[in-house]
Length: 68
Image (cartoon, rainbow, N blue to C red; front, side, top):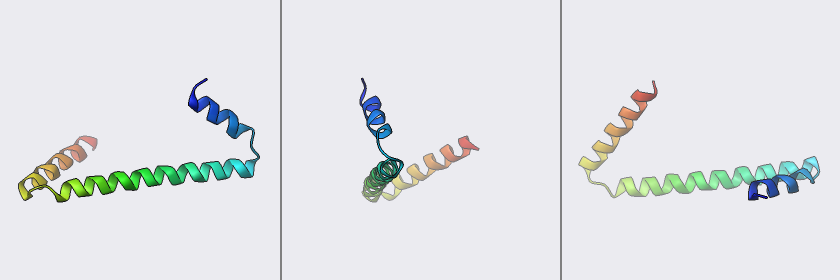
């Protein structure tokens, strides 16, 4: 049994109120991970030279244009 299956089995055995608490906690963990990633990216960008920052912006613009 995988970890995901084990978690699902445990969650299914809980009351709807407890399932909501599990969902809220999982959402909190995801948000924490996203914030930590954003902070890491910002720290790395701050350490770049101006020329490197311009290159990063150019790459971001290219990526945005590809998504259009």
